[in-house]
Image 1 (cartoon, helix red, strand yellow):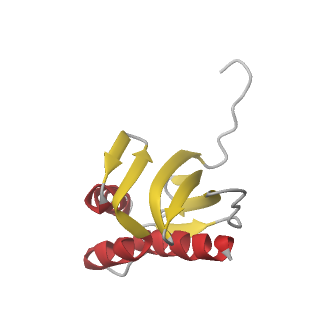
Image 2: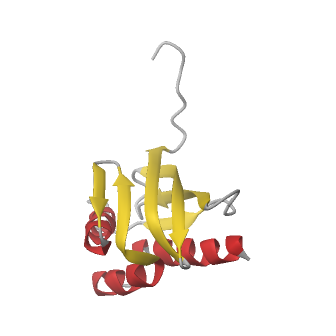
Image 3: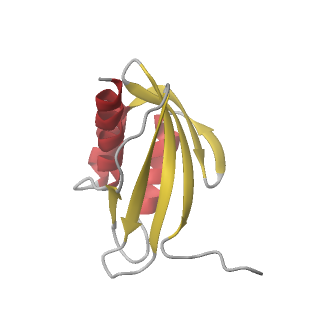
Length: 128
């Protein structure tokens, strides 16, 4: 049951990246996140839905065009934290990223998000 709740919140969060237009992003995030969510992203720590919305809108406004974000793994929830993998690609086949997010839930909503991202297919070669 707990994994199902986490999966629902995570999938709603991801749907904000794929919203039909920017005006729907806030409503989708409000369905998935607590108002005081703590977001640990590539640029550091920020708080609140507005901070997460700025991050999502920046991703949506990629120079190659609005991309697509998908959950690429099952949700694993061994304790009170859940983790999942995701993939982001742009419409022109431009930059493609993958990563793992770790989220914490409070009252069925995400109250903390930690994003770990890296390039798709970029293998760390010895000596690099």
